[in-house]
Length: 465
Image 1 (cartoon, rainbow, N blue to C red):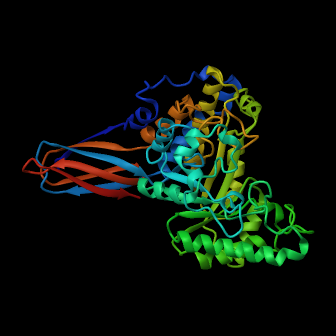
Image 2 (tube, rainbow, N blue to C red):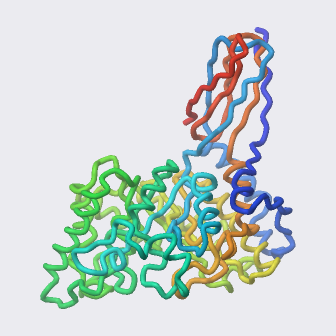
Image 3 (spheres, rainbow, N blue to C red):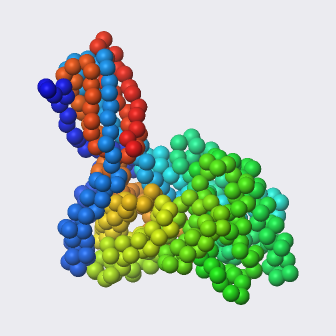
């Protein structure tokens, strides 16, 4: 049978984000591999890279087919992936807080281009500083004008804690997946309002306030957010005798939170559990919660390289965040039988110089490739994307951008992966009017553009899954 098509695979090179955030800054050369030691490259050797590529091919792609009729013979049908099923995200805690409209616009432009997901701050301490008066809606001191004129933004109690309503609306306008972070967490410093009861005899009152908070969030937001971190960092309390390690907390608070959330939110909203500890205790806690009827849809895993010295040790080839440690950690999480999300990651540049930024970019690229290749992984969320915008005590050089929103090598490394290497684009020359093209592409949504017999441009959208 005569072939009706000539198919050419080409790379999708996307320069839109770089131009949007950097004022058409030319794309730099890839980071110099000599920034890393020989020992590092021995750990991330050709065999490891080949295995990663094989898993990506197997687990992140699917067979696609597109059938068209009435195509102009001899014309080119262009098939371009327009979105990815995999979540590439970041928190959006610095919404309108960077000090100028120019910087804020650059920040916002990263969402919906590089990132298709955003984690939105719902920390109770700053969301409801006065009992019964949650600050969901934007007030005067949440506006862009306020932040553009405040002298010392980091000294404001709601720094990195924007009012959620405008952030949710912005994410909806961009078509982003969203995660609410976090509903229940025992941490006094970051989560519990000062007015929350602290006396042991008032634990029942605390439990009622927990339930009230969950129901208020469910009533207000319904299915507007894709998912919620229902419980954060609770494995430290799993089967712990003598009360919570955080101090006063209701008995069995994690299980109770999921049961109330299941009543408060629509079934279409996903529920995450989130923790920094990925070990047998975490897996056992999740198994216990699910066995008793808690609905948990995704397992969140944190990975914070907060200490710049650790990133330098990685470059020197020390056994930190190696392919072997990734396999051990992710295999432990797989014991849950649930999809995994790298829910919070930090990769700090060890020094704010050329080599330090190169190290950050190379480590980010290799880890993202490994995580993307892991079969049960469904998303990766970078934590602080702008330098010097983290919480107190967090490193100042862990961003993908400088404080002035200039893209760093780590940004370009991720952009090249997410919008170039992991996107599929085809061009098909139609030798007859009926076109049937079969291909293997990255999972997601696609758009086909072609000319019909009369020369009119047409588009068709379809999915590969």
